[in-house]
Length: 451
Image (cartoon, rainbow, N blue to C red; front, side, top):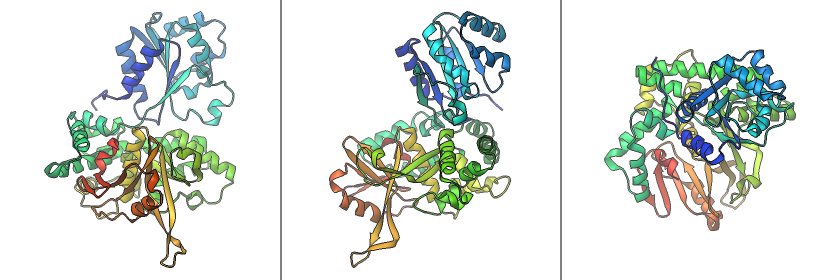
């Protein structure tokens, strides 16, 4: 299989850190397994420094890990690392990379003193960084700056396919507020391709190498198995793994919240919180919380007991949704790509929107409320829902999602009637072309990053 280093937006963020900090802090890049952290960091080190050392703590032996147990002699530590890795370090022109640093908590704690020493730069990568066992016996260094790395976003995906035109053109259509017309069909198909392949670099690499969805699916299954193994190490009972694998079923049920007991049975509250924290810390999921009072500062009125979970990568979610056998035939992917599979894809569109909004720097919130009967009483069995709410300035933007071309928006209408003074823009995201209906913007899903 061809080895490719894909263009990633996070590169510019790492470069800004290097220029602005000049060794005064370390950089921690946090993200799920297999999103490409190690690859982009090594590419950065190769391009921006005279030399570098990568310490992969997944592979490092006790002789390397033990170096960080005693920091009294930094000269000895640096000399040992240069000898083992056969790399010469240059003062203020070399970087030492702690890859999967959660595997060596003492190395992470040592960052304070290594940065203080000032000879070299330090970049850490990790997943499950905040899990209790990885932090309980160490002091987290204040000299550590964090940035999140996500699966490749839609624009990065198009770059990987050799296309640097589509996203800027879509943005132009969005800014001019005009429909794509004849170009909409191709734009929608391009988005479905991204939904099926996903943003994991290994899956994209397999697609470029083989143009075979079956091969892509096999790669995604290996990544999902890796996640399952990670969850089993955290929770040997298998409950964390079950919760992760249940996300497609939970979303497709169209319930207004994720209910852990449905999938793992009764569990003590403390354990339930611990399991959910592990899922969130894994960065494999995007958490969305119910906001009780939809207004600016939604975190202050969020109900952390009422939430939904989305899979961090929609390509992985598609494979998880088709997990009923050991592999998925090309024909199913082809039908999904051509939009001819008679399956309710609403939850997959919600997942890709959640992924796109998260990649654009948005926290995820939603709001539900009971409908009212004709006599004015509350209907306990039926409810309205705003799928996503964005905070923009001192206003909010409600979003209703439709996986089809239907333009009905009863939830959006009722919400806007109640909170009219708080609303900046109203959006309905669907599969048809851009349009406007009075003061509601009807936008195709592929325009989500521009909201």
